[in-house]
Length: 126
Figure 1 (cartoon, one colour):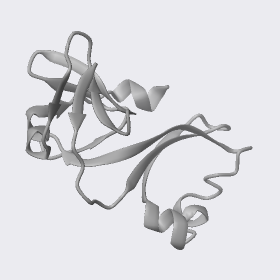
Figure 2 (cartoon, rainbow, N blue to C red):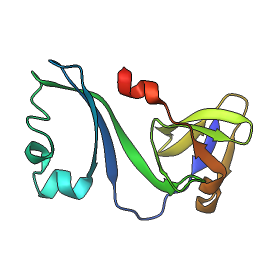
Figure 3 (cartoon, helix red, strand yellow):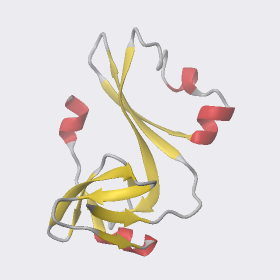
């Protein structure tokens, strides 16, 4: 069950969390779909970013295009708080959903400011 996040026309962005297989260093890279498709930017973002012998993609999360109450963009996979509820943003049923037990409610774009992303520093260490 969850909240449905309405999405207007937006620039499609992805957040990649990648790990260097040799050093275990984790990097976060933000790329727009335009840069991915039309400018062949990947080799220039990080050296050999998609050399699968050197880099491992840990996650690829799409941006909802909506900000939380602290004006941080909300991405698929983010842990968020909504009042006393805590859940995760997932893409399901053709839209972004706040996935939380015991709660199911749709909401409009302006309601995204009622959400707060919970920072997860441990994601950088996984």
